[in-house]
Amino acid sequence: MSARLTRFAGALLAWPAAQAEAENRQWYVELELVGPCAAVRLECGADGWTRIEGPFLAGEERTLIVPVPVRSPLGAEGLAAVPFPQVVLEPAAAAGRARLGGWASEQLASRLQRSAGELGVGARPSGRSLAARGAPAELAVVLAAGGFLLGLRRRFLACVLVALAAAGLAFALSRGRAGSCGEVELVQWQAGEEHALVLRVSANRLALDGERLEVVPAGRALEFHFGRDGRGGEVRAEGAQLTGLAEVPAPSLASARNDWQALAQVWTRSAGGEWSAHPEWGVGEALGPPRTGADPPGWLTGALPPGSEILVARSQGGAWVRCLGFAR
Image (cartoon, rainbow, N blue to C red; front, top):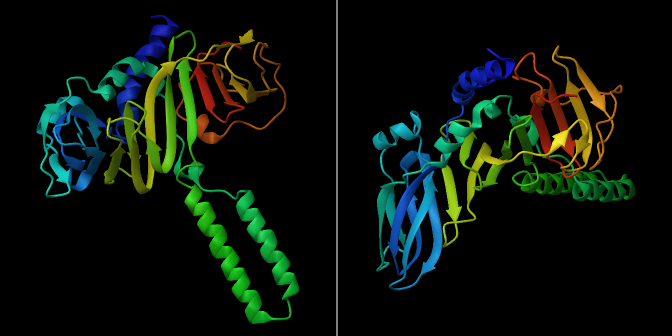
């Protein structure tokens, strides 16, 4: 068996194992709606709910395919055994009507699993990667507080009050930023293939623009929010790590030429498992020679197939990339 077929076979075995601890929470239903009503909620019990914001006018008819956050341990094949969501119109006295036509005939998560192959291999970012960090706003608060404390250094009570106020404000600023500014994006693909897997990871909330949704810790109740057209949705879950997965065109990167984006940090791994750093890699340029430098972040180097060359990099826009089978 060729080396390529060996890697592919290994990937097919690795995909279900990689997903065993992170089930999909994005399953689609068909919704038929006639107004008037202000909004529609699809209640999924302890799993959470989907809310579609209106208003929907009297006589307005809509047929939408929207996701619900139910749990189906057996995947798409097990949806028939999952309790069906309950439809609730808002307000309770709304004169409209709505019904669910059933589970959608095509589930995007199943399509992604069939096409992903070895793209599902590799470690995910951990919750520690998403912790809020200090930003200029918090630094300004601390510096301003330091100036006040210097002027009030002989007044103990005033110093305590200023310090507590500054600490509380800095904490509130960083906490309010944790749900959006902590997002991590990883694009992973097999060298020579046309498609890549993009993973977008965030704490507390995430845009529902992918084909699969993983949640840590598992079993957390989720809130799906959508506009009146059923698009542009967002998932919310306080204290959870949310990962959206989707298939995208593979970046055009080869050692001879970068036809994708400028890369600010670059590493390669040999087939023997040895990592090397490289200079910044501009668009239209060849990969630079190896140089001394720190290894890439640990979460990007774990659970990767042995005996394969790997490229790990970070674009100037902040997205991480990981290419399996990259020839240096």
